[in-house]
Each structure stands twice: as C-alpha cells, then as structure tokens.
Length: 541
Image (cartoon, rainbow, N blue to C red; front, side):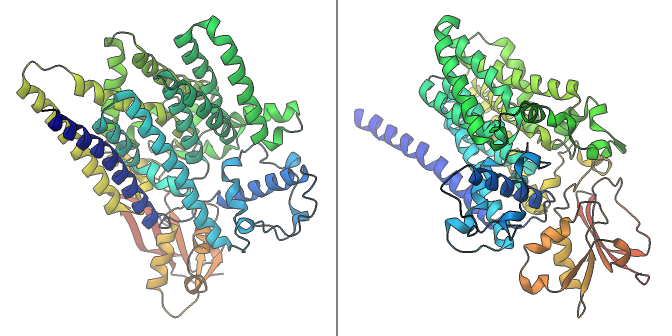
C-alpha cells in the first residue's frame, strides 16, 4: 500500500512539473513563430528616441565614459545631436525597462540595423509579458494549490487576444502591465506566507513599474495595507519604513530625469497622465467621436466588450464570493485586488485622465481583474455537492466550460491572426463597427504585403498617413525584406500617392470613401472592417 501511495505521489509531482513546463514551452514556441506578423506601431521610433536621450544623460553622469563617439545608438548618427534630457519634451516617459535594447549593438560589438532592432524589441517586449505569466502562475499555485486552476489562470491571461497581440509591439502599455502584474504577484507572495520573496520582488518590480507609468504608485499603499493587516501597525512600522525608503531610492535610480531633484520635474511626472496631448478628444466610441475623459463609462464599456465573456463572468463570481466567505488571508488579498481595480478605475474617471485608443492606458487593471476571475473559478470548483456523482458532474461542467472558452478564443486568434489585436467578444462584435479599431495601423503590414503581390512591374507609391496613424505603414515597411522595401515609395501626402493603406481608426461603419481612389481589398474580421487597400483612379497631382 505504501509503495502504491509513493508511486502516486511521484506521478503527481511529475505531472505538476511537466504540465506547466509544456504549457510555457508551447507559449514560447507560438510566440517565436508569430512575433513579427504585426505591422507598424506608431510610437516605436519615438520610444527609441526617448531611450537614446536617457542613455546620453546617464552616460554624461559617469566620469569614466568620456569618449562616447564609439556608441552605436539608433536614430542618431552623432552623439552630439541627441537632445538633452532635462529639456526633452518626453523626459517623464520612463524607458528603463527597454534600455537594454538600445545598447544591443554595443553588447554584441556588431551594428544592428533598425529593421533588426525593431524585431529584437518585439521579442524583448514579449519576454517581459512572459515573465509576468510565470510570476502569475506561481502566485496562483501558492494561493490555490491546484494545478488545474493555476494553469487555467495562465491560459486565460494568454488567451486574452488583445493582450497577446500587443505583447509583441506595445512597448509602453504592455511593459507597464507586465511589471504591474509582477509587483501585484509580489503582494500575493507576501500575503500567502512568502514574506521575504514578496518583499524583495516587490521592491525590485515596483521601481520598474513606477518608472514605466506613475499609475504604479497605487501599489505602495496596497503593500502597506497588506503588511499592517498581517502583522499589526506596531510590528510593521520598521519594515514599512525600510521598504518605502528602498522603493523610492530604487525609483530614483531608475528615473534619470529625477536625478537633478527638480520639483517641477517630479510634479510633471506625477501629473503628465492628466495633461497628455488631446489626441484622445476624437475617439470613436459607440458610433460617435468623443473625448473619453467626458464619458465616465468609457473604460467599463471597453473592458466589457473586449475581454472574453467567461473571464468576465468568473470575475463577477469571484468578486461577489468575497462577501460570502469568512475572513482569511486569502479573502483579504481578494479584497485588496478588488480595491486596486475599483480604486484605480475611480481615480482615472474622477481625475478625467487623458486616455485613448481603447483602454490600453488602463491595461494594468487587468492584473487584479484576471486574478479575481481565477478566484471565481476556484469558488465554483469548491462548492460543496452532496453526492460523489454530483461533484464529478459539477467539475466536468466547469472543465467543459473552460475548454469550450479556450478552444473558442484560441481558434478565433488562430483564424484571424494577425488581426487578433482588434478582438471584440461575442457581445462587442455586433457593435464593433461603432468603435475605434486599428488605432495604431498594425494591419498596415498586411496591406503592404497584399500590394506587393497584387501590383506588378511598377514602383508602389503608397500613402502612409491617409488614416492619420502617423506613418504606421512606413514603420511596417522598415521591417520587411529589402527586396520588398525597394518596390515601395512612401508618400506622406495622399494627393501624391497611387495606393493607400487605410486603417479603420476613428472611421465608423465598414465602408470609407476616399476621393480619387477605389477599394482594392478590405480586410474584415467578424463582419467589421480593419484595413482598406485603395488605388488611385484619377491621375495624381
């Protein structure tokens, strides 16, 4: 009997090791095959430029790095032409997480083309998201001690189509989400008995989170709350003081624009989110152009139509279940998660922060939301059923619901790739034509590849800003093979172009007429337009 029990334990340990390993390897293999399928991201070169400006400032503060002429920094050929950080317009945008990609040429002592740099950055952005997935898995494993529930949480986060797609090219919002999630997991580790691991990981990840976006500051009072709740105020003062000082010291080290200790710089960093340029004042939302700050339900609606429905159902179950359970450390952390979610959303709404492009500026809200979704799954899994048959039936139904959801969402992503970034759930799809879709012109790569195959024996003079995505098609062109790039001539003014890549950014409906042009092809997803390819029917000026 003991031998049988011993063998069962070994088998269970093998399964608990092999299944997560296989899942994460599968995710990595899929990512390596699709990372370069998405088109241009309009902020990419600006982000690279901001990183280069930070590198110049950091090097200026290191005495033994006087000779900087040998640096192979992108965008700028001459170190002297790089702007000064303290007067640079985007100085408060944290770029520390992405800085290693700027130094990749020097790290390998070999010049890296801009095309390859853009590809390397996509892999790097995904690896940050991947690290967040791993941390999330271990948090769920520590909390629920159930392999099926823990792996289900990882799959739910991976099969959130917009997040998966943007985990390759969104070096702003996904980077912030990833480190916010890691910091959030650190809170969980501390709450569930891993105090040393939770504290060290929190300080490290919190600094990178706040550097990426100042929204991350909300996690510090959350940490205070967690420590005080667990140890009491008197026993917590020393630890809280030390963690707070270390956290702010780490933020200071990671944020070069703070090194001059200019209060104006600090205040501008704290308030820049509410003072962003008003490009969000014309956002297509529910069929009309609005300023998101003027519509309090902007975020809830966007989240409600772009998160898979089962995850939302489980979230509400998880949130409601808190009220029915006895107080414990597990329940306290669930309460904290709900407070972070609702408190952050309320702060964004009440401060009328400038947000646009769907809910990408608030992607960090998904960390506590997806955790509560897993709590909802665990609550249903643990509901007591009198009979053994009833328990098996209940678990079978839950597994079937999860399986159907994962298969449905996964197959949708596969069928619609590389347009998974415009995912709307079953509720949102019928109204998708009333919302902004390809706000970054990511579908422009598909447009360029189509033109390359459809247009023969001529230079393709393609307009790159007819859709006001600030040259997304040109950024997509940079990453294409040289044999394809040579066939194209990017044209900024539509009146001089022969072909157009038109992304449905703030265009309602599925048809858009452009004077002097006709539609060659429209890329559609679930009945709503994502990208239009146009050709000139009247002579260009």
